Length: 263
Image: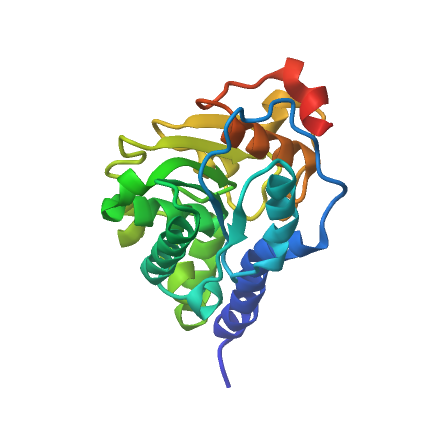
């Protein structure tokens, strides 16, 4: 019979891992209609690739992809191998293949990337692997740039039940340590969007990225109620993403922009 402490760890590990998965997959349910953007790009930029988070839920990003299509952008959600729970470097290679296919199809010279949750790490890995010249702009949504304590708890309770991507998101992991030697490489415009109400990426400030335009939703709309799972479907978040990808350069946003971003 297992000691009480071991039984507790075995019970808690799947719950913590489930919470990490749920924080990304619940985005599929949506949270309301998409927001309208206040600015349209005078000339459409290249294709937009949207990268899912841990668990690889592509359906959760379709509302945001559709919102971008309505704004005139060529938007594709990238499926990740292993449901996004395997090595994030392998997911980065899949993003690279998707980018190459999109550029071949459209004839454009660069892509924009939107990385949700762990998808932001995937985007950073791909850019850092010598692909900065193929990217104009990267927007990350609630990405654990410095890890999440939720992954750390899951890994400490039961390492065998914390897959490789989970272990790579443990604060201080080898992957994060290497990635954060240069948080936002030159040649690419970086925007990190996050919510103070994130209970999946903990602490929420882990989404802050040095060298990027860091944009907290509550600094734009002080009454914004947006969880980690709601980020891709929230009208305010969608308005921010469309605005940032439409503008000639990343745009500082504040309370005066709240109403029009929500549409």
